[in-house]
Length: 321
Image (tube, rainbow, N blue to C red):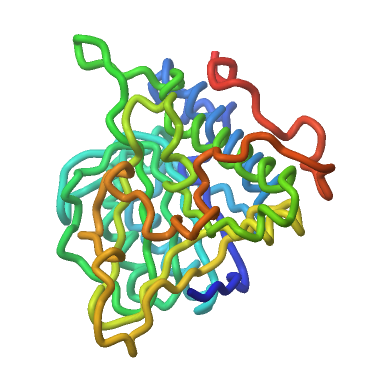
């Protein structure tokens, strides 16, 4: 296994509109807009506080069409290099499948944005990308697609708790964004508080691995990967416990878990590219005491570095009102 920290991390919060813009208020569903805006604010706070990255709010004008969204990302990848990472967060509605899989923005453009086109723009480069999607995604989404030059990972909300009429509860206790934020803060604080002797024994963790023990979620997040398994080095986007302890930051690393010179593939590292978390327990986790299962919840010693006061988010039920 090898770990390499990304040279630069650029994070994008999609559909991050001006809260006071009358056109946006008229366009968005009144009952969804406050929760959407609060999620964007919380994610921005997470990225600013914990991630060593540039944070870019992304919004479009009332006259913009989906083509402007695609052009925006073409320009962004042209200013990003191999060895860099893009993180794209989206909260909203999604639908259709295959090449038609699309996102519906609460703001603009009015027409649905083809998410596959955005992914294809990025996949043609050598830039790694992590999508954090608080929306639906088909469980067999693009299962035959591969990325030849870099790594794309998608972490998407699982099935949300619904009423008998099929109405979901955005912002409820099982909300994806709320639990993502809480889990990442708690994981970072735990690594900071543990003594280095224990931190050094822990394996790097990906976002879904960090979230997999969360019992508040009504269903597990879904993970989708674009990668050609049998021809190239396999990478995963992870956080390094030792680096967290040393810096107090969640700085993403690229973890190599198989080298092309290996003639025999370790079947324990294989997956189909799409899996629910409980089925994915940890080819990347079981290194002796490296398991992130809470074997050592008792924390001994004094923390060498703590997160700034007030950064840990409140209990899940209190984030959204």
